[in-house]
Amino acid sequence: MIEYTDEQAAADVIAAMDSVAIVTAIRAIAEGERTDEEKDSLFRNEGHLVIKMAKDKFVAALSSTQKSTIEAFKL
Image (cartoon, rainbow, N blue to C red; front, top):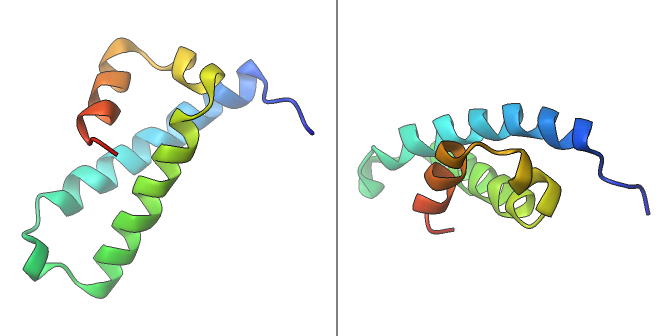
């Protein structure tokens, strides 16, 4: 198993914030008005955040605001 490093966690925070922006934007669209592409993107990006939040080093690399924002999605 490859070790998940602090450097990887820091890089993943940047990618996760892109996912946060996508999730926020798509959730602002009424469910019935979302395109199939938006639904797929929401599913992928929420899944990405769930996977990353399961990694202690990733969570430790988040600022308190970033962590709170992700947790507010209640994934």
